Length: 77
Image 1 (cartoon, one colour):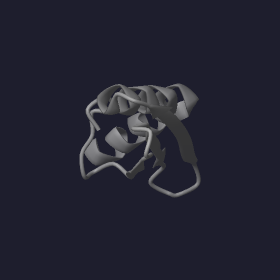
Image 2 (tube, one colour):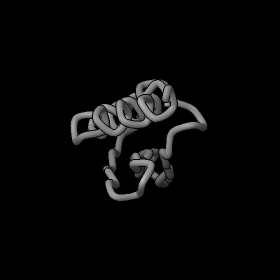
Image 3 (tube, one colour):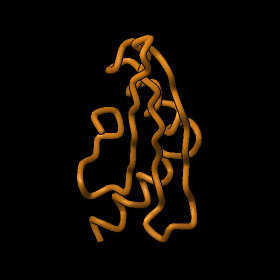
């Protein structure tokens, strides 16, 4: 949410799991308000904050910026 600059007003999701080896697997994404677009990615690493940031940046690169722009436009209308 920090990287996406959002909170409870954006349809984002995430699930983190921790392996016995200490790796964090984070699956997450972003959905358009109409549900037509769903962006989903997974990142694995040992530094939780870095894993979250990498996941968010991947989502933005996959089209998340456009989805967030649409959401903000609708919120400001």
